[in-house]
Length: 360
Image 1 (tube, helix red, strand yellow):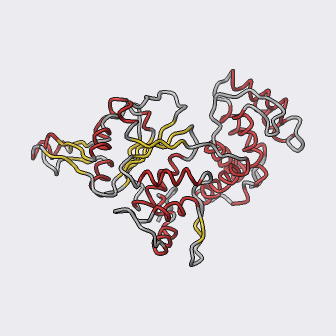
Image 2 (cartoon, helix red, strand yellow; image 1 turned 180 degrees about the vertical axis):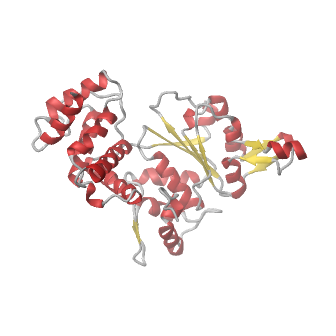
Image 3 (cartoon, one colour; image 1 turned 90 degrees about the vertical axis):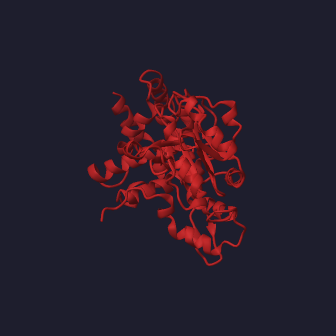
């Protein structure tokens, strides 16, 4: 049987969720699979009384996760907002998996989306044969979550046209969705709530109306606070993805991960880690997610076309593609960084030479 490339959170961490449910003695909101305490432990990691180790899914402020979980235990929806690569989607998936045992009730926001994706559509064969009926109605993931008392997820909310976004207002305020064609409505059962994510730096963003924004409690997802925290995140995710791709764990030495993360953090902040030199900031986001992608691409090169261990040369190509989005502004920023920082740093000659070779 083929191996699933990326199992859903509730499948990949089924044993942890089962152990948490067994050990959970705290009060649970209606239709929640775990208590808020257990959901927080699932996301942030810990050790249970029976010795079961719960791996961290999120590295960062505990308070952010507690606020997000507490929001979902109320009648307000949750909006996770931040720049790309701050684990918004990752956190929303794991929250849904821990609370509902189901992270698959997902709407992916796009610029061309219609209201049907958030409300309901019709099976036109049945509609023509039977006329409007409940059997002919095709519920959206949001409607399914309302009926089942689960968490629905809406990704990239600000990519959705504003008039389509507003289809959520009645759902979030009245906890009901009118179906005028059937002279009825779908009423949400206990446990229903919604997690939306939004990218505040992407092009093509549609601002939320004030009416819709009021229905959400907004939690800003920050970038990792420290170098070591970001290195840990990249290392953990690289190992998880590497297992799925059947790449050897030694293909990504921690030293290379730390060097890459240092480059991203310095260019992102516009200064070196010691604060002594100011730098040009490229237009690319240089997020943690992009760092993970650079390492994975380098791993594949090392395993299939090198000696199996990630080197500067394997990393340089993906690194260039991540940093240089604008061929003029970003290239100038990267070249300046190479000449003024990388070239002068002890032990960084290999990454300097590999990168200069690609720039020509």
